[in-house]
Image (cartoon, rainbow, N blue to C red; front, top):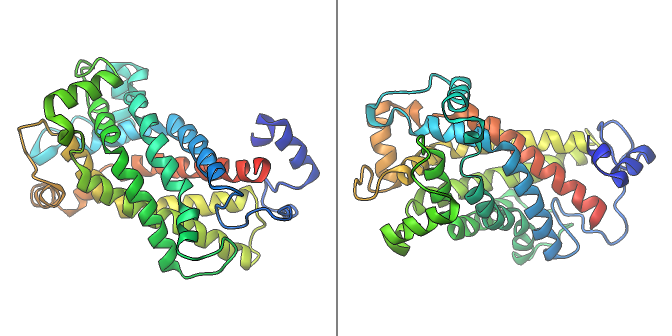
Length: 323
């Protein structure tokens, strides 16, 4: 499919320079090309490639995010559960609200990814280098985790208002809560002020930090080790294995924070069901059990797995062919 989408990719695949199957000849980086796990020749290219990758992935996988968010907020503190499972949630939403309802919140989601996703992936390598490590150097996992944590936290902090609007639009069953993306930003600002725009910052940043520090270093480490051991050549199969594994680890680690984020952001202003992330987690465990912190895990991975795969595959292809 990647070869079909681009003549350049098709040519390189036919010449054997891009290993789509994972079994073909290893591709060779041109002299002087950055060779870190996600390095580019200039930081600007890294941010541009990241922006293209995250927005592509977000658009394709948003329906699973909508399903995941709906399932996380249902049954809250003993309330009635509307959806039996992920498939039932998806079909119910499509039947009662229309298929396009699965893409509710696309506007703020793309704005969020343009800020958060672009910074999270684009800043990873520059932050690693800011720690005094060259792109080609070997260094321990702690520094990879620290670089990813910093990139994810900073990007998430900036993008909290976008996350807030996205969650509220996704959980709007009636479709009457807001007229559109910009009206949602305006209404929330008028009603809650600037501080209200950053409601849920704690669980949002915690989720982003945990997600980034598990996803990026795991991808980085797995890709590096598999190449060192020569299990795969540098191509599509290697990127797929590394991305899906990183997505699984990341989803499991950040799901409790994701549940807390969805619930804190979805509560009505003034209602104060939860005073913050810790209070939300404690009440959720007390009323629904520990397992409830992993509500929506399967739709979450159904989104994160393909999303991470799309991001890294697109990012790797952009690096190889345009950098």
